[in-house]
Structure formats: C-alpha cells, structure tokens
Amino acid sequence: MDTLNYHHLRLFQAVAREGNLTRASGRLHLTPQTVSSQIRDMESAIGEQLFLRSGRRMVLTDAGIVALRYADEIFALGHELQETLRGQPTGRPLKLVVGAPEALPKLIVHRLLEPALQMEEPIQIVCRESSPTELLADLAVHRLDVVLADGPIPPMTKVKAYNHLLGSCGISFMASSALAKRLRKGFPGSLDGAPVLLPSEDAVLRRDLDTWFESHRLRPLIVGEFDDSALLKSFGQAGEGFFAVPTVVEKEVSRQYQVELVAKTEEVIESYYAISVERRVRHPAVVAICEAARTSLFS
Image 1 (tube, rainbow, N blue to C red):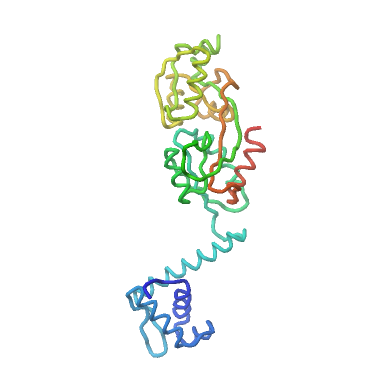
Image 2: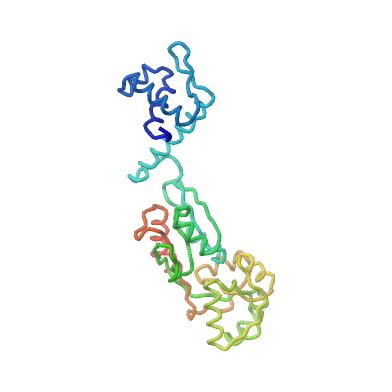
C-alpha cells in the first residue's frame, strides 16, 4: 500500500482517542488484529511511526500528534460536506468566493452582494479582482463560486459556464458641482470638447460610451483612462472631468464622492450577470443574489 484512505484515518483516529487498541476495536466492531494491521499499513504509507506502546496504552508519537490534527480536520470537513449537500447548517459561516473584473464599479459589486450578507445563515465573502479571462479560468477549476460581470461570457471563450442575467439600467453622467452646472446646459452637445474620465478600453462601459459619443458626433477630451473605477471617481470628485456611472448607483456615487448629476440617458444600457458553472445555481448565497437583483435592485 502506498496511499492513505479515509478508512485508515478513521481507525487511526479511534485508537488515538481511546489510547487503547482493544477499546478502539470494540467501538469499531473490528478485531484488534485487524485494527493493528490497518494502523501498520498507514504507518507504512506515510513512512512514520504513529504510536508507541506503553503497557496497554497506545501513545502518540510526534508524527502521530500531527496526523491526528489532520485527521480531525479531514473528518470535520467531510461532515461539513455531507451537511452542505443536504442543505443543513454546518455551524461554520457559509463561504462565497466571488470574482469581479477590476473595471466593474465597486458600488455595483457591493449592491449585488448585499443580499447575501442579509441571509439568516452567517456568510463569509471572499472577493477576487482580476481580468475577465483570468476570473473565468478560475471559475472553471472551481476556485470561484461565481463571477460578477457587466457582460455575458464572450462567444469564443472555451470555459463551459452559464450567464444569469441580474438586471439592466441606463447610465448617469456625473461631475463636480461647477463642471456639472456648466455641462447641463445644452446636453448632450455640451459634452463635446469637455474633459472626460473613461474606463479602460477593455471595459464594456467604455465600448458603449465610445459608440454613444460617436452616434451623437461628440468628441470629449479624454483626460484619463482607468482600470480602477474607484480611482476614476476620485479624479471626478477633484473636478478633472465628467464620468459615467450606472444609474442604479447614481445616488450613492453622488453622496460618496460629492459629485452631481449632469444628465441621464437610456440610450446606453448596462447589463449585469452572475456567471457560474451551473446552469441552475445551487449555492444559497448566489441564489439570494440572483433573486434580489431580479426583484428589487434594478426595478
């Protein structure tokens, strides 16, 4: 034998807890000879002695103490797995590992995740930021439970995953007080030549804005391009240029960054998705996110 298995760990744990081979064997409904043989197989597999005999007692070696700690953790996780698949509470916070593109507005991410934080079951959210390509790759190998995105999976993507539309909204143009006052007059023509702060070129919103500007024959002066949406808004707060945000978070942006609304448009529609490897989502937190987004967030 050259590998460990669940059965050997169970026998080892029982002997370690009882400290006596005979009592452990009785509890396991096995003969002492069988248990002793299995323990020897386990010692052979890991290349370490796990017990020392002291009279009738089985005393753990240093290696045995380490092995017991791992065995306890393995069985706890196994029990948690069973309860999770049965839909029963595990006693630990439910973990949700979320991926979000760097260009996705942080306020949108928080708004989408908020229903998960309001669940009765305690939850621990882990957020990962990266490029859409890297996030989908991590999703494919189950490093992520869900990816939040401002667009569906690109057609040429080889990852097998499913788009779950959460909702859509128009966009609002925001700026510092003085700049907003100037740009409101004659909108949208007032944006021609005005300083603008844009997402980076690979962002969905950037492509939509470029198309909208072109359709209105507008050529704003690009002052900055940003991967980080929060940094973009900080520049807008400083009066460096106007910028666009999803209308659903317009009020939060205005309050947080002390900027004002220039104008809104429904000619540019931003849609948000939860992307998962499941056609029908099963993770309770993802279910809560999807249901809340569809019933209230974008209404």
